[in-house]
Length: 526
Image (tube, rainbow, N blue to C red; front, side, top):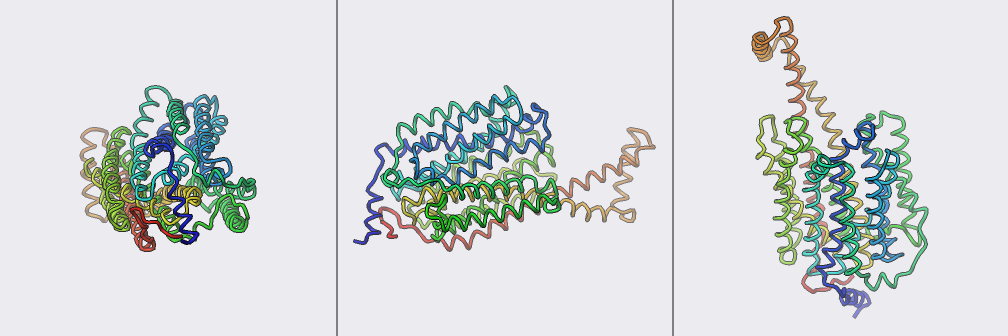
């Protein structure tokens, strides 16, 4: 028997002393808390801005500061887990997250709030990759798909109830309660993890290395630069601003230096060599693209319903809430099929369904009913669950156990970066395309146009019957121009949703690069 085979059998021989499903619930609580907090905070930003007398643009630092510290710790989770032990590190992060949440709720001013969010983000960074690594190691390979189904349910259910819960807490009590609510969840997660989770043998026996300080500084620098660019790019006309160009150069230099350093350092903060694994590399590129599509859609649809269709916030939230129903159906189906069929068939089906939902949304107009949005939203939720479970399982399916923690950190980082890029690109395209459509439509509204003259005379007649004749003409022209702006906005949403659908289809070739993972007790030899 080869050494590789013996190592694989040794990995399979270890099983945790607690029931794996209790472990799954314990780590899912932490992930649920972190994802829920992000979606709840989005709703509270306008209230935070009003309470602390800051502008809406300044309020975006509420998310930016959290995401920067979150991304840095997320990427370095593998090193911290190897050095301090995953369980100990995870418990520490839950404590830090809870304390950060408490400080956020008590913050007397904006600078203190930003510092508290940096603390909270640092605590939340490890929760998702650590949960995935623990789940994948606690369950045998043939049951990992079912474990990921449970994990996916927590990740998807949190943003479904987050906006509604956040709105209720903010309206009924105060924006500070969107942070306080994390504390009881953190206590439950801490107690369950302490009781049921344990480190596998390879982590207990791993060598303790010193912190890769250079890698850590370079990592924090390029992530911070990228996040600030994505948040402020549209506001300052992207590279039209000198400081944005310098920030882009700085971020690129730091990123390239980070890659070079990590590939050559003897004790890297992030082991980038895991990307040489074909399955993991393909799945990571794929999750980046999918993240852009999902986050872009999530950002655009409520915006369309509230700004173009004039839906109240609650009605807008209810319109997109059926996504949870589709997600549950996808989770149940994926959990049953994960060990039965080639996972690539599920991934192809999910990608096509996700693209279909985007193309379906590109058929919106000013007269759509709420039910029209419901169908693509359900398809979107179904496709997301059906894709995430086999994609994550196959991403790490050909890796050794000691590589999984580091791999899940990279995987989650790239999903988040893809989401941030997707939101930024989608909102930028929305503004630019709307301007182009407005120019095109205005050029068609001329005195020589019979349709324009007919519409103008009709509006003038109506306005003259209800107001001064002297202002009727100006009011009629204003109403026509508002209609042009509204139609240009609708057409821009149509184009962006089509773009997201095409972006989704680019994932199909990546599925073909993913090798099927052996199932049902068969041990893959590395």
